[in-house]
Length: 454
Ligand SMILES: Cc1cc2nc3c(=O)[nH]c(=O)nc-3n(C[C@H](O)[C@H](O)[C@H](O)COP(=O)(O)OP(=O)(O)OC[C@H]3O[C@@H](n4cnc5c(N)ncnc54)[C@H](O)[C@@H]3O)c2cc1C
Image 1 (cartoon, rainbow, N blue to C red):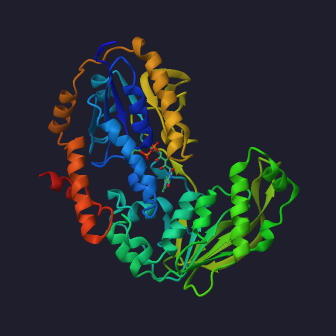
Image 2 (cartoon, rainbow, N blue to C red):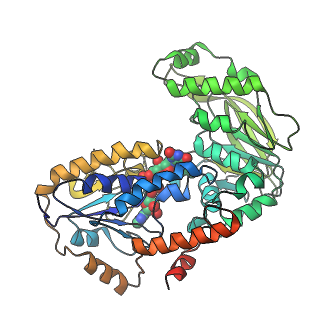
Image 3 (cartoon, helix red, strand yellow):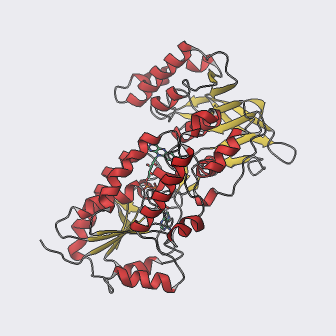
């Protein structure tokens, strides 16, 4: 079938945005697909979340580059939907809009002292070391000896590892220069990673936990060997043939415990299970953390942590919480406040239970913040399939013209960035990195990125 002139905007250029674009561009109705992002740089958390010492994971960008190279696909960066352009505006220029804007804020952790200086979200620290412009100007006081990370997902492990690595271990990565400089002066010697449930329920992957045992100058300890004495419900969970993640973790943890902590290291990581933070305290800033010991309640496969009332206080100079992400509402769209997502059925955004014509979601804003990069591919493909099934019935937009949208944006003072512009920024970053022996030296301010283009 030839070009039907149908047009789709995708809001968010992370993995789910690119996987949605890839699926839509394959359709033989030859759709035009424009990917809009609030940053001048594409690729979402692959650039701003994935740890700098995990460069290989970032190779997935090559797949997205192929999609961006399709002549029916455009990138419109540095344009924030809800600020520079409204949802209603977008519907004037596109027959359908797919929101793939991720989960850019955090769940709260309501404990006394959580707002003391020295208490941070993992999101902020990750954004800071990855050079995300939103977090560029933060500073983290690394002058204390003890840091605590709450959470046991892969993000918590990333934060723990970055704090525990030597500067030499980080120097050849694309870590932001300001972060490397600050980490070079870090006095942090102990990093405690704390999870509320046990080793069988931990959300990290075996690959990530194994890495904590392979650091250059850091010994890995487990707080309490008794945490590995499994009760019948944990044993049943572990024996469940479908629970391969837990089985891999159990194997990795067993091997790490058997190997024991490396000797002669100047830093240590301590992994705690069955503990929850109860209170942060200190004189004008975080100095102490109270943890409560937990036990598990409920049946195998559905066990939750319950406080025992037994508490322990520990020194804590720096506190990070990594307890989950949440989507951010956009004006003009319904929002499920409990789950932090756009309510949807199979990616069709719903209001009052009914699908809203022409509005779709994919990725973390559709299903919540879970899964790895690859998990977004089937998720986005489902949304694209439903959009394509609806396409015939969707009204044609009033102004089927990307140029008209760009003109409107410029009139309103926005400075849209094209994919060619991004390539110029990319080349400049790679050149700066080569001089420093890094894969790239990121620009960490939007103005610096735009200056490359002027
Ligand atoms: C810290 C961290 C580390 C991770 N590390 C790994 C890893 O090593 N390996 C792995 O497989 N997975 C990893 N993941 C998971 C993976 O990053 C996610 O599965 C994936 O990025 C989710 O894709 P997404 O497209 O839904 O969201 P995102 O990647 O967050 O992309 C959302 C995009 O939307 C844009 N946006 C947001 N709001 C607007 C708006 N209003 N207007 C325009 N644009 C907007 C953002 O700028 C962003 O580019 C990690 C996640 C985190 C948080």
